[in-house]
Image (cartoon, rainbow, N blue to C red; front, side, top):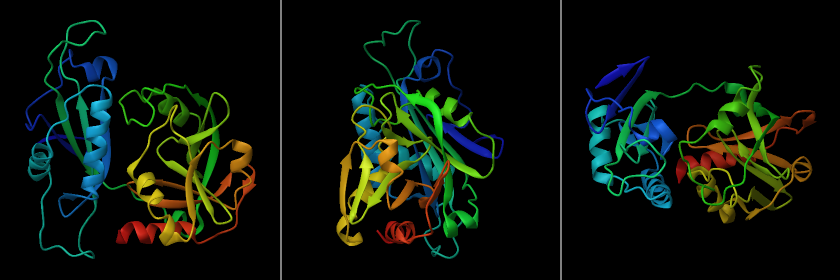
Amino acid sequence: MAMARNHSYLINGGSEQAISVFDRGFAYGDGVFRTMQMRSGLPVNWPFHYQKLVADCAAIGIVCPSAELLMSDFQKLFEIDNFADETSYIPEVAKIIITRGEGERGYAPPAVTVPTRVIIKSAMPIYAELNYQQGVQLRVCETRLALQPKLAGIKHLNRLENVLARMEWREDSIFEGLLLDQAGNVIECTMSNVFARFGNRLITPDLSQCGVAGITRQRILGLGKMLGLSVSIESLTLVQLLQADEVIICNSLYGAFQVNSIDNKVWPQQELALKIRNMLADD
C-alpha cells in the first residue's frame, strides 16, 4: 500500500498507482466522497454509507463501484480482526473518493468513462474529553453557501465553500463553523449537520437547495420515537436557531456533540447529545 504523512491509500485497488492529471476529479472536482469509522478493519454503518455513495454517484451520472470491490480494497488496506471486542479495537478512518475518471480537456465528459476509486486510511481524530462532557463552541461563518438544488445533499468533491469557511478561524476553542445560505437560513457546519430542539420537537435544516445530507443526520431522523421527540426537516433561520432549547451537531466520526455556545449565545449543559451518542452506538 502507498504511504503519505501517516496515511496509507489505494488507487484503483493498487498501491503503486497515481492519479492522472487528466482525472476529472482532480481537474473539476467531478466526483463524490464518504468518510467513515473503521472498527477491526470493517466500516461502521457500511449499508448507510454505501447506499448514500451509490445515490450520490447516480445524482451526477457516475457508475459507483460495487460494494464487493470496495470491501476488497478495505481488506487490502485495513487489518481485519474478527476476534476483537469493543474494548480492544483501535478505531481508524476510511475515506472513499470516487471520480468520473479520465477525460480530455473541457467540461464535457467522455461518453464512456472508467471511474477512479481511492481509499485512504488514517488515524481516528482525538476529540477533547470536554467536548463530550460540556459541549462545543461554534461561530457563525461569514462565508455563505450558494444555492444549487442539483447538487444539494450530495457529498461531492467541490468543497471550496467549506475550505473558505474553515479558514475564518484559528482559535482552538472553536470546534465548528455554522454555515448559512444566501437568505440567512441555517444549513450545516463545515463538517457536521445540525439539529435544534424546541420543547419536544427536534428540527434539522432543509437541505433541498444546498448542503450535505450526512448519514448520521439520517440515522438521528430515524431515532425520533426512541428519543420521545417529534423529528422533522424544516427551514430554520439563525434567529430561530438561537432561540432553541438545545442545539446538537453530528457526523460519522464523533457521533453527536451538544453546542454550548454560538458566538455570544450560551446554552446550559444538557443530556440530548449523550442520549443520541448512546443510541447511535447501539443502533
